[in-house]
Image (cartoon, rainbow, N blue to C red; front, side, top):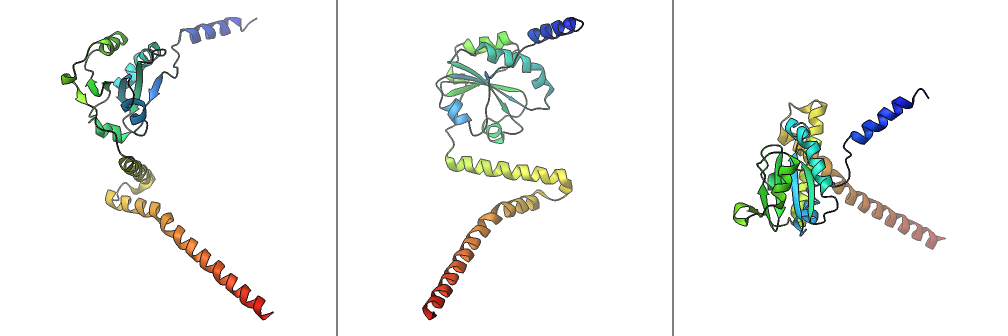
Length: 214
């Protein structure tokens, strides 16, 4: 058939292309404690930014590394979007992208070697001296997590306001507007409930008075 060579070429290109599987784990501010901090396994995590050219160049090697440890429960490969997960970015003092951190036995170690799959594996398998690493900070309390969530929501709304032509307004004013907007339902809800209950009570009293007269 006339299209057979085309489909054959398409099939060969698909087989030759690297396939991304679910072995590369996306880590967020809210999943880090459960997946990494509480895990007895080793985690090798890449902090990246979508605009970072170096991050893009090493992406295929990082995916290949993750795929190679797919069936290894003692080693996991992850990544953190530093543009979105500000809590982790701040917690581990990420100042540039990509930053690669190995988490093992309560400590983390910064990777500074070649960005190849072989070099990554050697770093994972080598014996690490805790004196050369940094102790992983204590788990965040639920209050700290809630605070980070609120701040992330506020930051997202502030960025949205900038996109809609409010970039000239000071951040303090924009944060005040967002906080008011977020708190308004919490203020209005009790008022509405009280008003509704009072109205129902008055209606009941009126009906009761009418039934007595009848």
